[in-house]
Image (cartoon, rainbow, N blue to C red):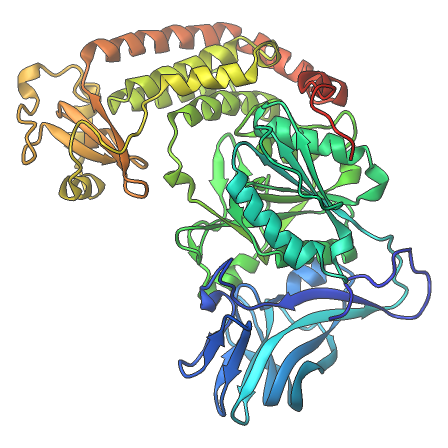
Length: 621
């Protein structure tokens, strides 16, 4: 295949430069086997996973109007200097090939070009040349019909020939922050070594920086892979260490890509990011990767997000097997940020004074892009598969989410008021207490109390010791719980519907905490109402109302924990909540000033190198 960028130095001549745009890829046993994300077909032909080819017989048709193999024509029109494309395929046999266009408004496919080709060997063949892209919106894609038996399709690619191409060679630093996840890291590194770093046409444009917060990763003995032992200062400390290491060689790199350590990703994604950034108009443009669900690989969890005092996920829960949803994904929206499961930004946007905020975990991937204030776009096919966030329950997360949400709002939102802060604390604390999750409620109260200690508290504590303490506070899911799991009870909670009168009764009685004991269910046998089984995520106060005990259960890992009704615990939490609300009211203005004034101090390189003790955890690269 042609090189993504042929010349390593800037080109100032009229000879067209060949620039790879996008490979056509096939499903892979190591990554994803949901074939409808890659191609559509009639049921007669078969995918040969061992050889990574599709075997097709006469009259059979493959269509590539899919998430990974359609071409996002409007994104390339609007954000790059590409005005025409070419398509090569790796095929054997006789085919009729249609180039089609479909857009969101009409969703009617139109023929752009058609060609019949014959290739007696499985080799690369040019199919379409110099197809102007300006007349089209939505997606371009191929439809291939076999005109004889025993035909083979083995991939292809889109490319462009650009005259007067003047762009210095780009290089991307991939930064992964990890903590005791050797198995995930080893799998992803192996895939990247095999399918990206070792490839002669593209591999030299990447280096991998693994920031090892657990100090457990062994070296990979590859000059393009650097393992950096680091103090466990969470994700923000790990990714910040990655930035520090990269900007030591700032002239070597054009972009940084942050990637989670526990994702499944196709190496093709990095090539697409590189190719797009190579020809992008805006040198400050950031690319975000969508998160797809690991348990249901065709469902998109999020395609970027907006922060407006709270998170608004964009295009959530789309089934990406359908053309309608792929086209919907093409509609460009304003993004405040993109999760650091996959986020590419230009290195020239940062310097020694524009580093992440010391959040430990959570909200760092929001605050940093918001402060960069660069345009962020997403592309179909640029994604990771990640375990669904609702399957990763941890009461510890409530601490970081609620504390850091308050800090982010006070830093980034001018209209975030003391009453907004108080409402949040009351809402989230009492919700947990209403649900008998008194330990989780106390974690949120600790988050509020630590927020009130101001920005200095973030750097005075030992983050590892603090994290251990918070882990001890919450409810702990286990395999064998005190109460037995019964699916019929679980289903009853999930499907429970209440009317307005019932909702008001719960509210005025503080979800039963003001009700006399005789109004509670007394029977806690398997068939009784005295204990309920409640989903670990998306639980509601109505699920436990008037019960004595509740089993919170995660169907995915089959773990749970039991909580018991306690009037005493509830009113202790209520009093603490009211006291903290008064304190927030009195201190809010001074806190806002402190957090904003110390922002430059806590996001510069000198602070971070001292905080991370980089002199202690360092090695030559």
